[in-house]
Amino acid sequence: MKFTTYTTFPEQTSNESLWVLVDSEQLQSNINTYQINNLESVLTATQFKGNFNETLPLFGQVSNQPHSQLLGLGKTAELQAVKLAKLAQTIIKSTQNKFKHIAIDIAALPVEYHYLFALSLTQAAYGYDEFKSKKNEFVLQQVDLISSTTSLDEKQLALVHAVQSGQSYARDLGNRPGNICFPEYLAEQALALAAEFPDLLKVTVLNEQQMADLGMYAFLAVSKGSERPGRIVTLEYQAGIDQAPVVLVGKGVTFDTGGISLKPGLGMDEMKFDMCGAASVLGTIRALCEAKLPIHVVGAIAAAENMPSGKATRPGDIVTTMSGQTVEILNTDAEGRLVLCDTLTYIKRFNPAVVVDIATLTGACVVALGKVLSGLFSPDDALADELQQAGEQSFDRVWRMPVIEDYQELLDSPFADIANIGGPYGGAITAACFLERFTREYRWAHLDVAGTAWLSGPAKGATGRPVPLLMQFLANRVNTNG
Image (cartoon, rainbow, N blue to C red; front, side, top):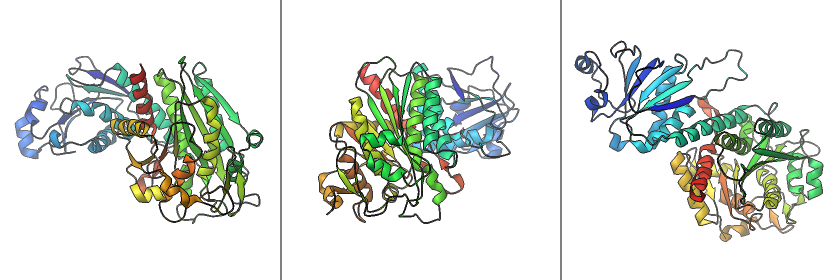
């Protein structure tokens, strides 16, 4: 779906449907631009007030626009970013299976919401029917946004289009089942991206023997239980910029049974989403390639499958990490931190400016923050502030939680340097504290997206978060350094 901006309604246009956003307190002034037949009598008959998400069809009452509707914003002074998604869903649901080209008059929408509204339209337009025999007929291709004043310049529109591509790609990967999307498949996806953007990307894939040669026995403790071998994949995006890279590390557990510490069967199908951190890294790299931002970024994917078998790791086993620290594995379902800790050690070779890992790491984070905010953990105040700001700008929000020394003793083990779980309390915090022990040589932040990477219930599916946040974070760094 592509966007074009206009200051006034274009005289020559192929759009098939017009939507006009209206403020309930300035209803008349919002629609005076358009010659609407019998407007007063229509408003009186329908009692349309322009309340939030209230619609009024105007079929045949606007010149040259047989399919026109008013869509209420309520009082714009009371409008919040969280409501934009509902407005976008209303428009997309009514148009995406009917029209190729629509126009939306956003003059009544506060300028600061124009970017988020465009992004919300792309998110609402996403559909996934790859494995359905009857495909959805999504035909909407072009959206004209009309406003005499807008923040959506060419640069912002390019970012919207890039985020749309990367986020949709991440959602596709997350939604694919574990029998299709396994560790080697993620590696193949990275190589396909490099083939698509050969001037921008360099991809390296480590197999299990190479990992063993590097001493990555925490990672291998997870992957050895599966018939599907693990992979560590790095994608280096440089765009001709000679600077220390931002490194994004994604947890890519393509299916998580819990291993020997087997999960309950109910809802286990959703454990195909345990690779959504890796999917968000791949999605961000795709978005970067399309936006061609002048920045040096390395994406790293820790791809493994956590299965119970005769080769699987047992609770009580002790392994040595690439860093040399030893880990007592008390619960094999705390596997994400094991594949991540070796990957976080491996990426030191890139001499990173900052490192951000993204992981569906703990159910405890879902208990703490629900499905609204991602958990942010970092000992670095400046880096945490950068990520929080990017989250607000992209409405892909985070909430900072502690990763401090006070919690580290909960990970003490009588037999090894560290245990892989810290007891029943503060599970998201102790998981972050575990990772922190492997990141002390560089600036680091951890995003726990267990609650936000996918939705359950009737709307079950991957969300593609935090691709919008990560792209905004990178764009902000370009603007600051440029």
